[in-house]
Image 1: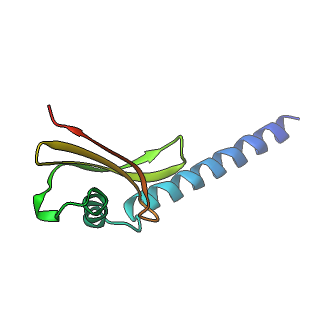
Image 2: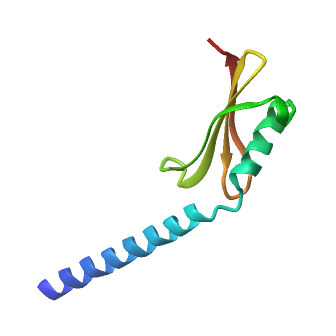
Length: 101
């Protein structure tokens, strides 16, 4: 019985470590670059790239969705834009704009 429990624990640890390595390697090499994420974000907002004052471009793992996403925030003409982009596909997942206080 102890051998079965030990084998199960080792298998779980191996699978967990392998999954973690896969996620870590993807994080280092997402298909969408930060520069491309910026382009996608300003295109969604309909403004020129030169007009955007970027506050944040960050790659994060979203546990809720089980994927890596870029969180892009920028200012333009008194408005603050926030855009979430899938780091694998480049799809816009969320978009918000409000007056900058």
